[in-house]
Length: 601
Image (cartoon, rainbow, N blue to C red; front, top):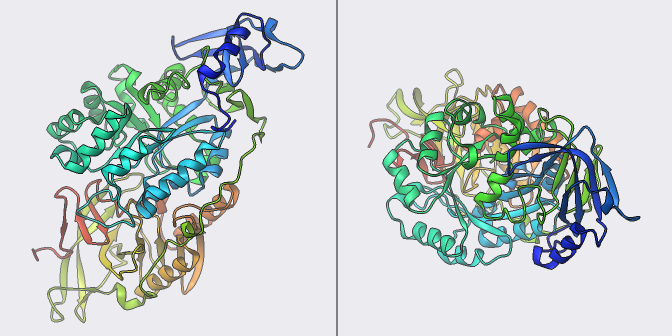
């Protein structure tokens, strides 16, 4: 049932009451399962659940509510589990359209997501947000939008394709299905009273909605100022100590398990070892890519990871359902199985495995025994959504030559280096001694120091910034991506300038996405024609393309897990320590652009 057909409780409450009292027959009854009650934290064996008009009507012994047209689902030996909710995620990171993502998520037991479409907002602004929001409203997956807050993520370090202002947030809060404000990444701006940040937070709170956060700093005073400003959650917690402190200060702790960032193992210790109350702990994915959806799952994988780390299964399910619903103030509709709630229900044989055999959304069976049974309408993006890579001209090898401020006479120079960290959204701050030839700083494959470029792809300005990266292990070839959080300019990295120019130009011809090249040939590519961020192809096609891309990275010498996701974050100037943006090399700790060469300030 899509949002346009989904009934609000007052519209169907009389029907539900009639079913509960036996004067009307149920549409569907789940018979004889073990109910996972997220309200009591207990298991209720031999329980029936009667459904009518897309909502729960009755819980208990419900065989008497069956009529000749009632669908009976026998659940003996299975658990009756509320549909899972992802409290913070970016659909764009799946590389899929909202519709294709919904198919994959529902099959894994996710019945609702709170998406933050700030990736497309950085390319097309409020218009892009509306496209994805509208697409989500017509699906059997419940798609709530948190309206992007920081576009660009900072005003001083980078330039995106669009900007959002307080007036955009005020308008967005009036849209049906908008649940709050997307992650407030500009935490220094919040802490120090930036008027734009203050206005966005005020607009959200005045609309009675939730302000979600992003706070990677270890500063306790800044954390408290951040919370006092109205931000109530954080998903950037990577240590147990950070997590416990945020809970102590009343924050909702979002514990992330994505494709490249694996935080559950460490952060969930606040529950398993510190004994913290889990009521304000939410499980989320943040960023997942197609292989993860196919091979591991979605929210069911995150819940499974928490269980593996020692969390009681019912408590883990609470973290992936009712806790999230309460945080976003939609628990009147979703998050648990109780009279009046939307009938979003999973049937699961083993809570440790968390693999649903049946998924019910709004009272309709959408997935059963390996088959998707729901219908999905086609959403058409406008033509200009596919025209987002605008370069001033084709790139040439000379565009990637890094001049030294020391002049042609120098034989070597010390440079700052962005150090990639496997399975982490953070980067390290490195240094390297590199040769200078003809006045240009030379990369060093031997030291694993590669040339890195960030090119404006929104305005056709010809702006190019250059730096060096370490930790990817490329020995040859080049890679490029228009997925470059958060401003999504064109990122290029390689062992030779010729290969870098080839990679950039070929990716521009595809309309954006990700690419790996070697010896003037394309090894693999994932075309993403929607805003340079999302494919228009189905999940199996995209998954195959991503698998080929991952293999191509290995062919070039990289051994990192999900290297293209780590690469896509190397331009994000709101997470420590060192990043590249279209304006230059950004020191996130100092929140300023710094020279590439050491000792030249």
